[in-house]
Amino acid sequence: MRIERRMPPGARRRGFVVPVPHTRSGQKHVQAYVQTLRPMVADIAATLQIDRAALTQLDDPNEIGAVYLGAFLDDLGRRLTG
Image 1: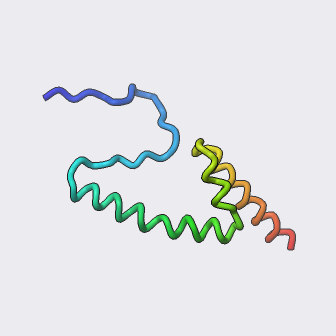
Image 2: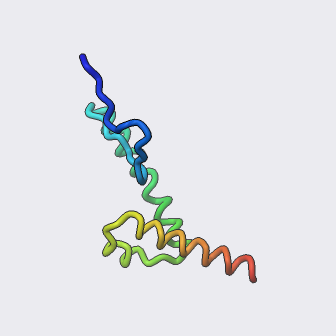
């Protein structure tokens, strides 16, 4: 069996990629992992006072990350000055 590289050497991948396994048990493990993370994301959004309804209109993950980062930096600035 011949194995090929999926990415050329030196190439960089942007963002976070979760490899989805093909087996049923592997897919269940990935689903359990994602279901565990969802409440944490909701808690972070509530703590930073982010309007999650407005985020559903954004398609680009970089824009969503920028909103979270901006809210975090604003919150950090408020804590440091006050």
